[in-house]
Length: 256
Ligand SMILES: Nc1ncnc2c1ncn2[C@@H]1O[C@H](COP(=O)(O)OP(=O)(O)O)[C@@H](O)[C@H]1O
Ligand SMILES: [Mg+2]
Image (cartoon, rainbow, N blue to C red; front, side):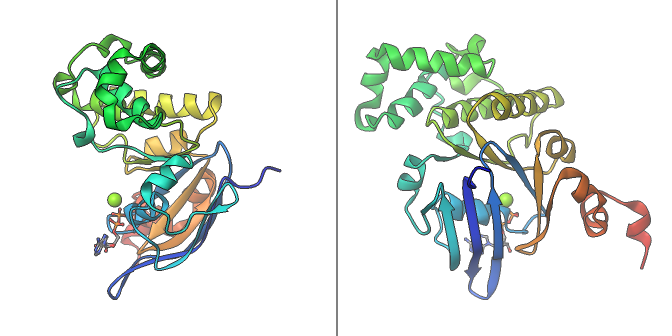
C-alpha cells in the first residue's frame, strides 16, 4: 500500500479560549478525494488555513509526502505541491481568461516579478494555459476579459489557476457556492475527471450534500472543531448523529 500523501496528527488551533480545530488526526491517501463537511464554525476553513500555511497550528503536526511541513510559510507549502483555490478577487478582471492562467503558470515557473512581459512572449506557457483551459472546457472563454464572464465561470478559472501550480494536494473551499445547478455539475464532473485521470488528491469543503456524495471517496464530518466521523459516504450516511445534524433526518429531529 502507498504511504499517505498527507498525515494530520492531533492538529489543534486555538483562538484565545476557543479551539477552532481540536485534536484532529487523519491520513489522506494519494488520489483520494476527501470531503470535509460540518456546520458554519465547525473549523473547516481554519483546518485549511493550517494546511496551506496561512495559520500556524497551536499543537499537532502536518506531514506531506513524509515531510513535516508544520508551521512552514504558505509559499513553501505551495511549492511543495499544496494549492488552495484562489479567491475570485485574485483574478485580474482586466486580463483575459487565458492571461490569468498564464500569470498563475508564470508564477509557478518562478518568474513572478516580470510575469506580464514573460507570459505574453512565452509560447510554452501559452500552450500550457490553453491545455488547462481545454481540460476545464473553458477554451471558448480564453480570449474574454475575466471581468465580464459569469460568477460560475470565474470560479472555474480559479480552479484553472490552481491546476497551473501543478499541485499534488488541492484544497477547494466550497467550490460550488453560488453556482447554478449546471455550473455545479461542471465542477463535480471536473473533480471526478481530474481525480480519475490525474495525479491529484482533493480536499473539498462543501455544503451541497449531493456534490459531497458525488465526488467523495471518504467524508470527514467536523463539529465544533472536532472530528465527529470519518468514513465512506455509506458510513457517514448511516451515522445517526450525522443524519440528525446534517442530512435533515426529520424523524430524529423531532425525537427528544
Ligand atoms: N482568525 C480568527 N480569530 C478568532 N476566531 C476565529 C478565527 N478564524 C476562525 N475563528 C473561529 O473558529 C471557529 C471555526 O471557524 P471556521 O474555521 O471559519 O469554521 P468553518 O469554515 O467550518 O465555518 C469559529 O468559532 C470561528 O469564529
Ligand atoms: Mg469556512
